[in-house]
Image (tube, rainbow, N blue to C red; front, side, top):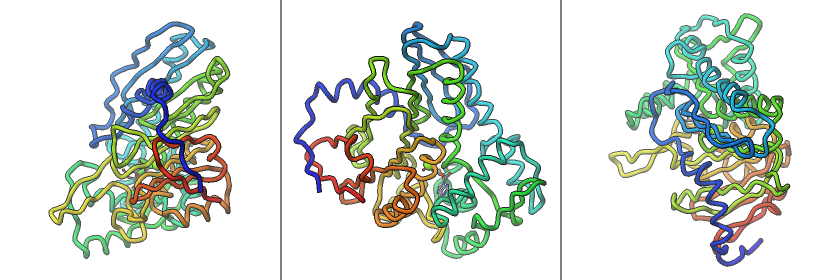
Length: 361
Ligand code: AMP
Ligand code: MG
């Protein structure tokens, strides 16, 4: 067990805030905004530090390229990839490929290579997490009202019948396309931003960026390190006090993705809080004891899918998964305010305040 240093001096937290206020304060998905709110890319700055901003995938995104390497036009072209990805993968845009899959009533839907690839990756993540991550949970997500923002607590019978449609093994992906059972539906909301971040990162790197920080609605992706060679410092929000942080990680060339119940939740007539991450085995919002889960991985799609999965799986299963697969690190906050940090990232994580950190091995 590690005891955190007493309060982090304000002069450390302040530069932290510069990056993280861009990356995280704007990161919460908030309520389900209308999908497809893309009204162009706004680029500011100079060659030494150029920033692009846009709203896409229901969230605010910024790309900050440091130390040159790409022109403003190249930055714009790279960022334009994201609304294109969204137009294929969105569950709410009626003309998207995912909407076509969800309207297919048991028939096979032909999809593009990109959509096939992300669905295939999703199935791999389901197998890896024993179904804690499952894109076929969408009928449940919808029944709880998290898509339209019309929140409700479904009855037990309704959940029972929807559970019959859920299960990643019911989805078939072959040469012809995607087939779901009639009534089955998918939603890539727990992996799409991570996937888009990987594509954007690769495009920027190909264009010549060697130092950049990307924030796609709180999914942080970094290329290289800062121009002075120091690491990027990414703060992780405190799920119990959204104006504060649990600590920060110093990273380079990796992705950091957080899933938190606070991003989208409501209080039912019964006074209980229900959030948007559903346990596909019960049909109810996940109650694993984890209230925020951050995953660090070189692969952003993996980090995104696993941040959702670990929220469902809880502390013990998260440790088991990492022991088995190893390609990721994590920081979990439990409902008693505890921090559990996986061994491989513990050296790069600095907790804020008096928090105790349990290292998971
Ligand atoms: P994230 O913020 O990445 O954790 O993704 C949460 C979103 O993914 C939710 O708003 C749902 O659309 C969807 N979702 C909820 N529960 C699951 C689950 N167990 N597996 C996959 N997607 C889920
Ligand atoms: Mg996710």
